[in-house]
Length: 548
Image 1 (cartoon, rainbow, N blue to C red):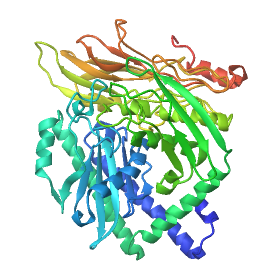
Image 2 (cartoon, rainbow, N blue to C red; image 1 turned 90 degrees about the vertical axis):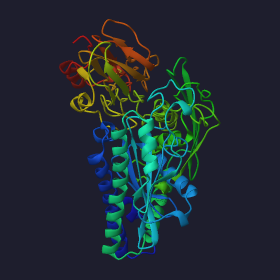
Image 3 (cartoon, rainbow, N blue to C red; image 1 turned 135 degrees about the vertical axis):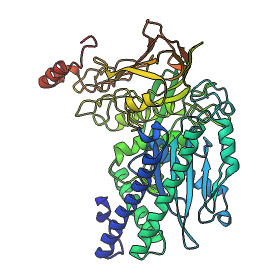
Image 4 (cartoon, helix red, strand yellow; image 1 turned 45 degrees about the horizontal axis):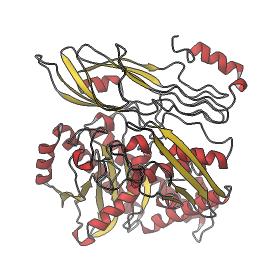
């Protein structure tokens, strides 16, 4: 946050430094908030992969600080979601000890599997702010985590914005409804309590901080944070070329390819991204509510324009998102369970437009969407064993960058971690026989695309499983940039060579193995310009030949 000191203000130098220290202190508060969720969560997607977010907000619902741990799809949607909570619950109905919850895709973070909790923070009887957090839970009932639903009503239990707890007392009726509607009630309800505890820790640390430094509320600190951030964003946007640039990208879709289109317009004081031209709303659950599209479009812009400027309401306010009703602005009750598949492609669409405005400065396309797999395991016919719901996060390769190779098996843009196979196997009767980099999958170029990975999964002896495929870049590989070659497309098959679909619920019988080959990232620049030492390193590392 060193940029703050470059902006003149009516504060004394000592007061500037004091505010800067308190800003850092506030960030440490939300970091501890997020760590509480990581350490207490029941679901491996939260505990091991970091699929969560945490943040602190002023009484108007403006995000002041976020934890580093968290995905853009959670953090940036929460920046809007907290205001939705404030609009729904009147101030006179807010009390110390309250916690509010929703999984509404259009008011929260885009699909039912994400639980968002908001907690008002009171200092005495005065409301001084809010804490919010989000996490992906393993099950919400319905059809399960997949693209096969025809409406949101099939995709699981819907929780409108409501109270999880009032004055410290948890709503017992809500817990009964959850237990009656979900397959893994202990895991999910455990995660609800973890989310509530996460906010509570943030609240207690904030009050300790305000008492220690002698502030009655967050007003002065919040104004300092938002005015400094706004000024820094205006400086960055002013330095950009002005005009409009458009880009299109084809993705796999469910049964038909999906066209994504973006037009980026850079003006004097804002950046506008318009998604007019995208494919219409799908009948399958790959649609994306606009709140989630906004989150990843803003992230793409910030990665290029202001990666070092703190992410808060002021930095997000400098970016406007527009779209007619289409696959990236799906309306209720469209099915949206796999909204991340399209949402994670949004940054590459936006970056492709920015590459025209800033030639030679933007990375190539990568795998984009996570290669998540949700497994529903059970004993085979006539066998005894256990049932379990298993969620596993995997990543393909990142696109090569203008001066360095792409990252292998790394989640961009979501930033979630890959789960350790030991933690995944512990949750259900499956065996992961292979999980390794996929040689030859990175696109060639002056800078090579990141490698995908090969994952081989089988049911334990006496078991079988169904799995929800939620993969992309199988028919439409990541494209290279500035002369770089495309990355390798992905594939989904059984070990006997049977090809499977990249999306939808499918079956793996006892004795068979599922083989996933995640796509590699596109290359950047002319392959003939690749450094000889880099080429030799690729050979030594076995990165080039899939049969090596």
